[in-house]
Length: 62
Image (cartoon, rainbow, N blue to C red):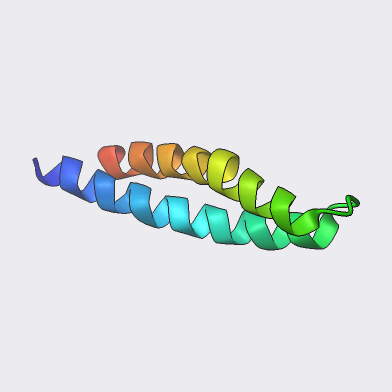
């Protein structure tokens, strides 16, 4: 139970960290005219869940 709780906390932190970092990177390097929308959607719906999944797995293994 303790490992699962730690994994959930890792997943939340991983989601937030990856979403913020990817938002900044996409906003800075995207050549499109609607950078803000692309950065928000990509970071929240793709990079955030990927980071949460990786962090959850790391939290379970630690």
